[in-house]
Image (cartoon, rainbow, N blue to C red; front, side):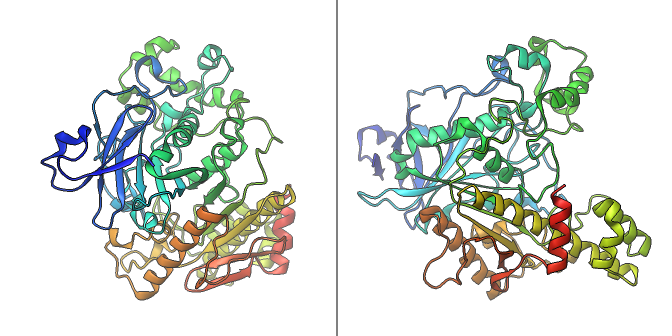
Length: 514
């Protein structure tokens, strides 16, 4: 392990750190030496390490290039800027500051961060590589809730990294495909993720990590990214396990799911070039990033089935890898998120919701999820949407199992305590403070049950990163999926639960098969 702790004038390269107030730690990367910090309990933290060259100028809308080497020791003590996106002015729906990017966005953004366990001679730690969410239009590695110190204390090395989003990460134009040797356009954000995973393979042993034990994990768009990486031939061999939180089988959007063809993406993105007033890539690459961001603010961006990064189905990657897949009770498409008026508790709204959810089968839906009044109708709609998502996860897991892979599913239903906003329920990403064991970052009236759940979830996730099995002594058993319609409930209760009532399961299996 190529790490040397310095606290003063020890070590030749560290003479410049003699006046440092806290211990420093050095590691060598393919780009040069980096200096991190050591927390009081020995956790080593490196922030803002370049894993690729800045994707600016002629490198805009190009696959990431190797990081530019540096001659002097790089002070890896601050997060790199998040990739170019609109900076939030404050809370967005249920997402408070702790869920949002910090710092000024920039195109020069391809940096990663590392939280490594306390150095132990002769041992290498499993790696958990985190991929953030944000609908492929926002997000960053420096989000407070993604702090990996609590997981590193459990013996797992945590890496998170930035990737390009919005028009910078997923723009598809015929001109871009024409200049590509692979006739590919878009998916630059996914290529950034692959570049980060390749960097991990090449460099993580120098930080005490094991490149043969990399688990990729993500939530929302990050979970969909994990699903894309499972499919991508470019990512094969770069990781050994995968965790998908509120992504595949939950977010029903073809553009987000990577089922958007290149030709369809090119048609959808054509208004972007029209808004800029030019079809010249050279001119677009010289434009200020803010202008491009403004032109793409209403466009849908996401993974593209381009035939290179994401091949056409039925290619499924290495389906033997163990995976974890799950959702939260009031996930996107289920609960209320404050975007527009709150749903009205009327029978008309109930029937309209059933028609949207069930289409021509709305009468059957009404029989399965009846309601006598509007308030009961809102509850019935929520129950129907939850069943639909859980059954979708069940079908995804069944296909993975049939292909030879091990899979575990979960349903997180613990209400994050927030008396001021009960309307958000168990909202999309409300499990993150528990998974990272970072309750301390949020000002909430935490109870002992919250801390117990955070301990359990962080243990489950890190156990899976270590062995492919989330179980360990002292934790309620999380059974592997074996084809039966059950999932693991993660909340005030920890244990298996039915996916849905038998009649509801049969209905949604039929609906989702079409």
